[in-house]
Length: 560
Image (cartoon, rainbow, N blue to C red; front, side, top):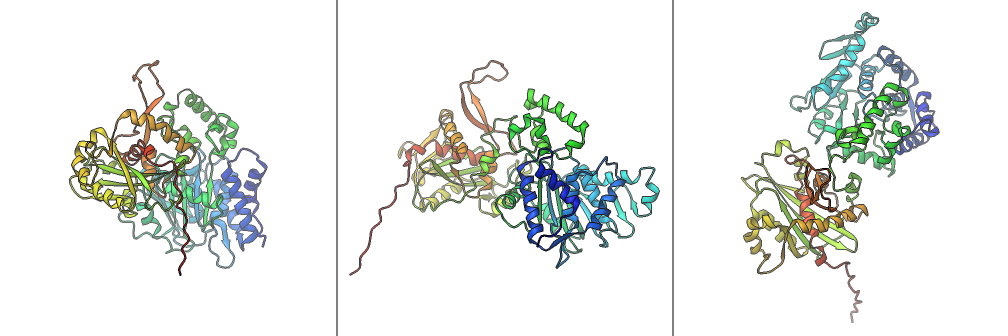
């Protein structure tokens, strides 16, 4: 079909293909995807509309409209299917390094869609964020732009504004900032929902309330603008995974434009020529470049001082402030389908910090180097830590990874009933749990056939056991030998765990470092580690399992 690509969109394509400055792999893949869409699909860009939108940028104190901005707005807001007239990419995911101009882009996009050039009456723009400052910042940017002395009289002919909102007088479109409480939002009739800094969202409660109001107006859109962040297994990770499937896996984009800017790898940070990979505005902002240079020098001397430098500036989650178990990429690779483990031999690990809080059981299987794990947890609904937990625990419970216990404690029978049920499916050879936790569970475990003294099929795990197995766990992550199925709770808990050097005396520069590690929590209240610690316990006895599964002999059956 080979539809024509608008010159403003082509400008960014040329930058990426010609490597005018450094761009990440995701941009190269996206450009190839966009070109393929224009070649094979019956779509078009409304050139006149895009020119009008770019013209509106002159009312903002922008030094220039960056090529990546014209690319994004041109595709997201001005490109349509010829047969239906609907937007080709109604959803935008835009991950940019801090300082690239997200809020300015949101402000500009909002004015474009409120303007008569959009042509849709009452096309409301709702800016959604976790706090008032992030929600209102683009609104304040628009108001500040309109109140410039040289244009304020002109803008008042087309817009009306207060401290809380901006309204288009001709289209009756309204721009407002919305904070994170989902209550009272069901009556919204948004034309577009723009989510600012989605990395802070822990679940979909707020997102769902806003987006379910879409569709009442023509051409509904969603925009997600963000840097990377520290909340894992939330909406940001889902968007990143979906983008990966589109750009690398060849999945249909379903209307999502995944515009991701990041370093390809951590080592790229040491060459400042690579920094535009994460911030495509940087070649045009010398003052910002100098500021990032200063931050880089400080970060290199002491990474703990600027833990957000890699995460926010370069969109590479940084674990330098804590020695994490492994990189997040290694944790995500565990998300592979489990084989049929019925009747396989396995070990069982148990962990809990307080029976009034959280508890986990892990079944650990081995086939050569590959390790398979089935992990389940229980959460006491009266735990005081629940308000602090930054994770979608209700969704995990709904999906069967977590059992909610509405009682004063997680009674040991919850764990032993689960283990008994698992014994019907798998051959549980041995069980392991922390020495100090055994007293509370000993009677309940004895009732189902596990005892440390009589049956000698329970290992009481001590710190030295964890030190020994830590190197094995590290090797499994590095070589991608862990397979956990789709268990976001276990991935989250693993990402919450840090390595602690054993034999060190805190506060001393030349303290002893024996090279041995135990595990600890990155944050004591909100970030649970029990699922991972149950896995670690189960691995302290994995040598009791056969190294490899023996293939069952095939018998031929003859009937006479």
